[in-house]
Image (cartoon, rainbow, N blue to C red; front, top):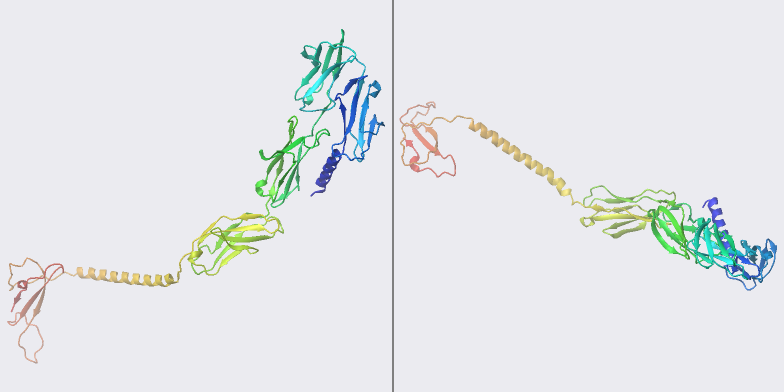
Length: 481
């Protein structure tokens, strides 16, 4: 707390203490003017409880006069006019009040104390030993009421601008006389001011706002009510309590604050100036991350709760949750480690951070963790599958090349000479021809092929074009021996 603010707070406390012990002089009847020969009682009122041994001292025009709580003036004289003050034992001296004692024919009487917003009665009073006639009231030399002999004028909800310039005239008994009055206005309370304690706020601090005003000595403690507002919205309704408190303040409590004070008697209300209050962060909102980003079953998983400490020397603790259930109590470690996670460790995780001293808590967003199955088998299987696939491709390529080569060779024209053709054959097979030469040869003769030998055997075999076609009829086999 700054020295300047401390001094201001001390002054406020002293001022309130003094005002609570400052007496107030009141008149009965409550008029600031009377005629000579009339009577009046003055009383020294103390708002706090009055000790039995209280001693009072009165002063008239700063001269000692009496030691009783009340002074009774009987058959007043013009010499009784003056400024009166009083004090009690161990109290401050009161503010002075003025009494005027007049010998005129007509006076305009006003109450001793008038506060802004009050309903006020003015009395056009004539000397007691005479009879009064028609009364006329004026404001700033303009007639505001002109009828009958009613000596009183009622003013409702008076303000400072309307407190001066009143005058009245009355016939006493046959001549017209006038009296003038300026109403002695007093504020029920001064302009309110909103004060924050302490004057700088951080998350977790207890914040107190005071709506300070100096009330008139005539206003009782229950006469004023206070209300508080943040960003124009009411946060505390009107009550006798002039403080607004926030326990363990958060950043959401930042905003523009003001207060209002109202006088319960006449509903006069005054608003303070606005005060902007910024609640500083202790640490930033945490973020949860997983290392590595993708985790498979059996591999270590690490969750980290990251935050930035804004105010130095702030001790933090961390806790972790899975599917709303706490899995790690608050401690100083910002990590949660699962050495060998299983599929059931999948779920929604988040972390929470709190300050050790002020107990400020902040929660991260949720992180969805989806663990993958074991990959060791797949590590072995994938190269094997690739090898088999490559082998199949190689085989298919080889077969394709061989097929192309066979189709590029032109088949030999078949010889049908010397063969019998059966008309029963409906199938036209693909025929393969073979020549077998059989003839006697000497043992030492060279092996040669003699064409058109009488012992030559020609044998033809049918090859179907498709295995789906029916087998050839035996009569379709041609031979010539």
